[in-house]
Length: 272
Image (tube, rainbow, N blue to C red; front, side, top):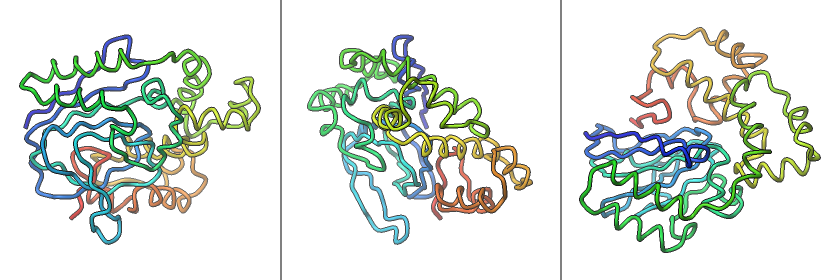
């Protein structure tokens, strides 16, 4: 398997978390759960034939995904094709980072996965065609960087108003007072929620819950045994029952089942 991770150039680092290229991934499972990670993603499938999103309960095909697609902020897990034998490039935008490229409210894409052409126009398909040409992963990353740089609009407002709030949540999700933090922005609570939804794709409260869920994943992934009361307390939950309800709401699993079923990557759980 070829697996390459790329950190973008300095100009893009405020908005793009990373890019990943992989080819020859050969898991035993055909489906997996993708758990909410607080990012949005532009995915290029560099082969022919669709990948799929499945109904979480019946596991029947719910939506085909072909060529290239944009995945908005997710508040619940998606059951997806495992990508067996695929060749793919994924551009992961930081929270609040996609709007300069999408150029419309990110809240429009909450809990959605849509064809990339409907978001970025025909130029994204031209980019995909170039990515399919024989070249090494670094050259592919550079092509995406060039396309992003040419498409980006001004991001000054987000960097001054939204990004500090995002960083505050990420630094201490177990302690933050969302209402107090929003007041520091200089906007009313209602105005700030509207702006946050536009730039991030979720309300501040929804995003906070996902960040806290990811703090849990950071603590438990790769472990085989955990003291759940300690995890709940460390992540800011007043009781273990609330912690378990939140975990199940995002992942469809209780924490113990996650431990037993976990895969190599914390946000991808094989469906057996």
